[in-house]
Image (cartoon, rainbow, N blue to C red; front, side):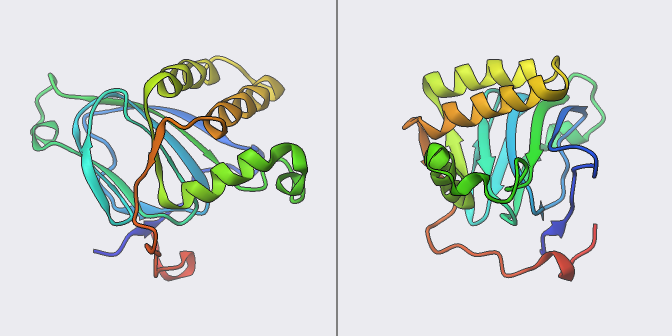
Length: 184
């Protein structure tokens, strides 16, 4: 199955934060040109990141880079209409240059530049990093304007300084499709 391309950020925003609640997560294998940080607050299923496949559950925190196909496929019981099963997540989307084209070239942000490079394969965060990041992500839903940018930078700084992660897609994985070749 070919992944679907989609772009989730409105033109007048530096980045987007969305609180998702639904009977199941989006069942489409897709990719987009933005970075994505996704926190599963409720739900179980199988996570596909590039050529990586593993189960997901509450607390799953994954950072994916641009054009890396991904899917959080909810378990079958989430599709049967039973209201006892539902999903919840928080997703953050941002483009590489959300703070300006030359920002990542500065010496002060070399760790974030390295984080973005690792995200090309997808990263699952665990331990203290994941717990602290979850609290910051939840706060993003409650702040606005410049405070949101500062909080996102703090979150990226936390993730960039962490060793509590594993890379997901294989080192040689490459998405052969381009944005112009697919439609939603």
